[in-house]
Length: 379
Image (cartoon, rainbow, N blue to C red):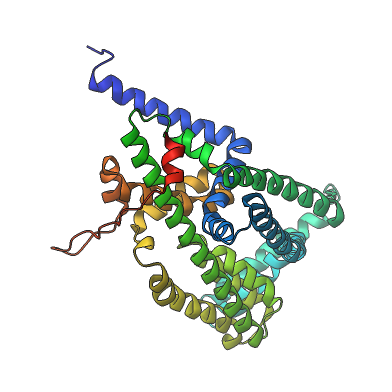
């Protein structure tokens, strides 16, 4: 019999609640996406904001300076990338055609090139016959010009940026009220204090993680851009920015960057060395970054199971598209930091933590001290 206290009822209610939450996030993405980006920005800027506050700068001025710097950097990136990206979209059919022609010429060295040529010739003859047919009419699709699309894109980006940074500003300036609100569900002072301690540790760890990651990604973009400039690749600064942004998406980002760079090299160059050198240089630099630089500076903060990362990328990418891919790893890092410090989340920690060698103990997480300000804010 199904009663309110039965395990089956609680399980079905939990599943229904999860489905409702996912549906709300999916259909109300216009509301929840800026909120998620604002919270993520506030977490990333937590340590710089605290550092400026310790120097005697008022919190409002420190927050204004940091968010202004973030807005300026994002707008500069957008202005540098908007032109090349729009031109690429405009010339997409020509790029695909040229890429197919180049691939066809490369495949001529293999035995199957003759069969591929016959098939392409047959398709070309069929297309010519269709064009000669007097009943076939030409259809012209008029699209907005570059200036109209650019104006719309700039307006959308500016609107989203203003909303995101406004939310981040409120979270940074009004940290104590938000912390008090987060600890309200807990009944006792000890539980409130423990929740405040956990959240403070999460803030510090997540902020440190993404600050170091951003510095590494910028260095990676500069190194790749210089390497591509030395190899004669057009627009090396655009490739450097794209590589730095894609590196925030673990596993998937480097694959997208490598394939895109390989396709561009096939279109731009003719010899095998010129075609393979740019993606090979990118892969080499990325391999050094992923296996030497990042583990050295981040250590256990990147100790997340690869399967969990892939599942998070799939879920958030399906939910919110490319923005979801950007948010996937921050959400996973926050969940991992909370599970490391909260015993009730121990099962989640075991799922997110990679498999350890036999006999190896899990690395203890140091306790985070909470000062008088946090004690007063939780009471």
